Image (cartoon, rainbow, N blue to C red; front, side):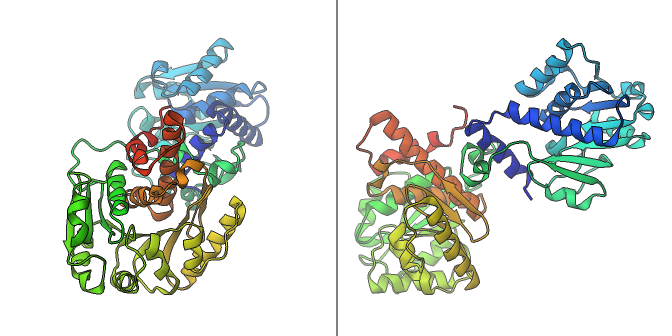
Length: 486
């Protein structure tokens, strides 16, 4: 099954792979026409009740495949308000072909459709686009369709029904049959209707490989407040100063509202000097030890996500502190760099995103992942499953030419990035973007988006400058890597 949000992402990913949405609409419309033919003999009267979005567009296409039927295509609303170019093109195609169409601009005109005389009514009003109770004229159209003595075929999801929950905020179509696309929608399992899942030609790669559809994000609300979009704490530094600073700055560039750095006092002034945007909190000494955990825990409690590992080093006392912190921590954490070594025997109730390269992956208990994306995928799935069996809630982001994201059940593969990103520090940037995303998204989605954005930022840098990329270049391009309007 697939949620409405994930389906929208897969649609966009298919388009990025070279399968145009208009082509998918053609396949969807053909599938709707086939379903109609299964429920009515040639010559039957079919009324297509259509909204102004792509759900209606599917029905506009279907009308062209029903030449053996008496068909009327009804648009609820003004043609100039049709919401997408491909739906508008298919509406205009009906007009140019002189096929029967009508527009309903007012709920009082619904009765003029005489739906009681129809043999089949196609509900293509909203589909997965429902949000709250229906407005007019959609609400009256739903009531009229439900009252009609006709077979009702819904396109994708009955109008008014939440595609993920199967619930309705108000009125909803009581469908006899549903033609849904690509995969079953969770909400359809609760209805009493004949549901057909139509293959419309979306390649498996659109789900497997992370693409632009995965990074589609809602704009920030105008009444947002500081912290609404995430607070990240970065526990790092000691032997290295740049790594934790890169992570925190990347978290900010990826959208987090606040980034705290928890570092040894010996390097605190140096790290603060990297950027005035960073909030630095320190503990005595020059590396993390168990005695510093009071400061670490106090900061982690104020954050949505804690990153632990960048620049920490691998001293025994440092790893003991990492293990102790994670063992008692119950929040969300991104575990990176040397801190990953504790995962092999860790017991924790926290929710983890682990970001190893191949060597660190094996220290976590994984097998040699190999070089192909399929072997890396299999290794990541195996280790994630083993961690789950041990009681850990862990998602793995295995870094490489192909990034693999897996929690043992859901697995994604990222192909953005380039060989110039083998330079030091790019993984620290990835950890920061992962943390920012983890503030707002479930673990697999957060890690997938982060891998895509980090790699795309690197691609943008190389496109502009050629070779010679350094990690700080990535940070500046992270906001551009989120853009999907190119």
